[in-house]
Image (cartoon, rainbow, N blue to C red):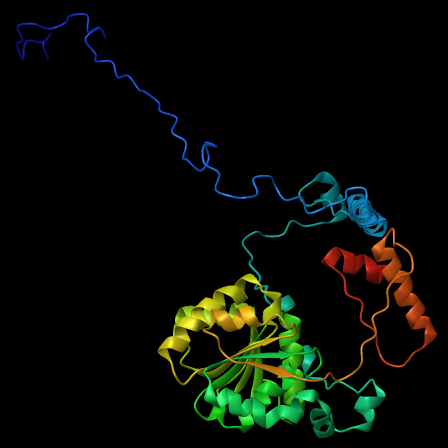
Length: 373
């Protein structure tokens, strides 16, 4: 504009140089917080805690080597996967000679991705008794044989007098299957649901099926369960088994859990992330709802921390256990624990003892290699 004569200026730089541009100087200050600069020690143990005390022990050496059975199974599976790899021949000359047509990308098929996570159809069949105890006794006699049946009235009295109760009992005492039925028989389901949380989906499904058989009702009506991708409940449901994640999601929709009259936190000693979050949420709900009953069950005797967390609530111990348990240890150090478990399982199976046996594996790939072996 100055060149064309539209505007006039007395002093201006004809070269438009960068000499008149102001320079900006940046001063960087490397500020370190006091808890990171090393001036102040905030812990009594500055050195890291090493989980392995003796790195030369047999357990540490076996852990570093890993499992040979799992490694061999993984290599075989990858080799088979490479051999059966499907090459895309559609659209190539070889594919045209073989008559392979290219699929239309516009065609969209409805795929139910949740079908692999739904188990309601498999739960309809009734389980047959496998042990002599289950074959000789009816369901009512089996319920009365459980240790929790001997303290049924005392348990209901302490639940009636307190909003929060900690129950400690051995595995197999009947806490999971009988507590919900006792609350239902005592009238807690007249004004709300009786919910019981489980740390795993398989436990929620199997326990719900067992309770429905003991109550002589259809699974999904009076007794149901809710897991991820599957909700087997209806309007008639009064006893509901679910994973702790499902109850946590319901608490986001209903902060006060108005649909529930009693909540049982089963297997609290496992201390999963969802369980710990639910403890804090339910403590706030109990302070707002005086009619809600919270029952925390644990299989260990370390229940004082739960009682202190909820304000020194009473702790009820269920004496006795259903069946005796014998603990047997290996005579020698096992170099490969998966291989030793497979051999022991085969040995027990070949003995032909009545009943079934259960082998616990850590991860899914270990379980897969165990079954295929």
